[in-house]
Image (cartoon, rainbow over all chains, first blue to last red; front, side):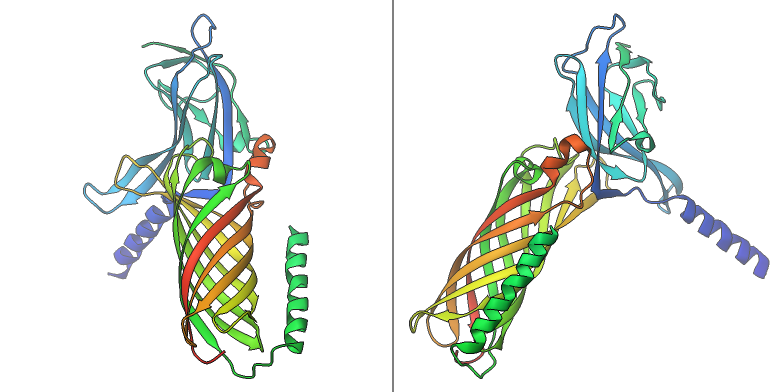
Amino acid sequence: MKQPALLLSVIFVVLFAGCRKLAFYGDTFYTVRGKIVDAANQPVANLPLVLYAVGAEFSLAPPGGTRQVRQLSANGMTGADGAFRLIFPKSNGQHALILENYQVIDSLEGSLCATCVEVDIEAARDYLIEIAPIRVALP
Amino acid sequence: MKVARFLFFISLFPILAYSQQHDPQPDKTLFWGPTVGHPVFTGNNFLNHSYTHRPSISLELGVNIYRNFGLSASVRYHGAGLQTTQYVGNSKRGGITEGGIFAFYLIPISDHWHFVPKVGVATFHLTNRMASDHSENYRYTSEGEIYLLRPEMHYFFNQRISLFSSLEYGYVDLSRIQVTRELRHLYRASHQFHLSVGVRLWTSKR
């Protein structure tokens, strides 16, 4: 009888240990900077941008288990030259820049979905993340 | 910021020395009471650019240590609305909590009027609550210190109750916040002015 209880305890601990709650830290602010261009390499002006922190959390509420959570960390808009700059607080999740109404057709950054690019804070230099121009197109 | 700390502690010695020579007052006097106020941030910094000012509330407890020289401790809270999220991420509102200690010297001007200059240092906790599209409410806290100069003018209705007003200056040291070099000047420090009125209850005759 002791072995199943022990096994369940280990599984429970591993589940909780593996799913850190998404958290934000006000002691560090990152800046992500880049430019959005269209298929003809022309700047896309006034494009709304949102940056999400994405994490996984364990929940006992139905249906239970691990679920993905995302929290809007910062939002902004491209300028007339297609350039943007977003400042956001550090978090322990992944970060994704979402381009509303556009699809990413070319980016050097990793892509988490068709309309977003990954913002890797591990690649930051002096808390600044420079993103190569992102080519987008209307879906 | 080490210079500011040094100057703060150095400034305590003349007050203590002066208090040992003047105005003998053998009895210990405790005081406490609430204060309401209104803060204003100034300067080219993210606090001034990002937040609107809301009224503050604080509580203070103090005691004379030697004659008219004393120490007090206070906690203060004020909310802060957002006028832009450009520098602070997706915050919907902020709240600032300060907990500090003060050194003061009580200078009687007349039977009813007393001038009480105070110098203090406090922790500065700025908590931002993030706008969320689901039930979870995320928040993050930026921390610093605030160095305070607070001249208070008290009017004593009797020996036990005084009403006072003050215009306080605070230097908010935010240098612990990490940002990229080109933005560092916005996150280094801020200046805070605080207009306050309050009531103090005193335990014994001053």
